Image 1 (cartoon, rainbow, N blue to C red):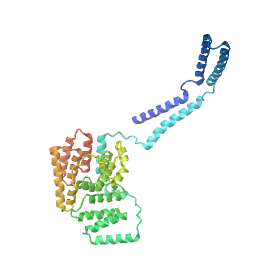
Image 2: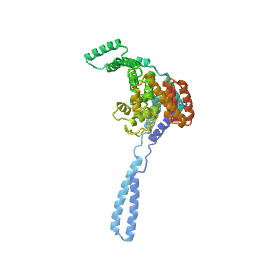
Image 3: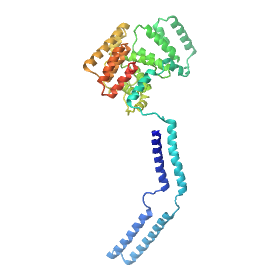
Image 4: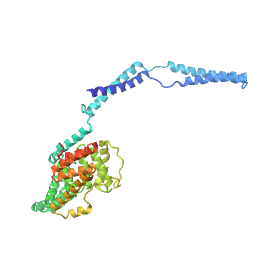
Length: 413
């Protein structure tokens, strides 16, 4: 109620000010004729002085006085006409001023009633972070999101291609233990716009690959889920992205979709930071870079950040967080599932030891919490989360990042 009273008072005050200007019809400055009169009278005095000094003769003085007097009479007539001219209709002015006051006041309140959020209280940073965490935990599942997506038009393809895909489905069904067949099926189902069938085939491929998967595979699985849900990053897609980032923290497509997810759950500040760092990492021609460039200004606006153009691949980003090198990733592809898991645990352990002995940034603590949750070490992840909150207790921005990651991992209460 207080909000409505204050808003109505401000709108009425503005309308009243405009109405007073209309009614009083005030005019700034003086008429030009009044200035002319002062000049002409000064000229008459100058004529008398010039005559006394002998600069002009009496005949010339009389002729000049006559001309100046004629001009004085003309200026005085203009001034009198201005004062006695028709006045602004007072009644009409009052009616118009009242109508304008009602229009401004009523229009302001009406527009807010339609476009605003009456009764919605102010939210501090802590409340917004808490709501973002709740939104991350309680948002719709993949199945629920797919149920709400309207049917999309299928891409136009040749009939022969459709028949080939049908044959591939039959073959993949007969060879249910062939990972390559599932990978091909996922690709071609996506080409036909059958994204649900595509991500189901991709899931089968990952299951059958016996650990011979990388960050790209999990990101592609997440992407297919997102496309099936109409652009929505579901909890299932988020889990796939978290696995991809645990394997390769600098994987560009995963970082793009991670930022998209952060924006959807109400954390555009973290999304903007993720996208800005991804832009700086490049490369400029990458498709995910173009996707970020098309949306980062809107994300910056939502985050309340003044966005400045970022050159892709400019190298001005903060130092990348420690992660596996390209050689390590190539070598990991040749390891068994157990060996890959052991490799990841080794990297997580080294990161944990370094943070315990040397400290580190909030991003590194958040990475450790997320990696531990992916590995299923929930108790240790919760311990690290509690320790991180103590370390960064005086840094609200760092706490916001850590709380969000913990909420996404199901650790925050």
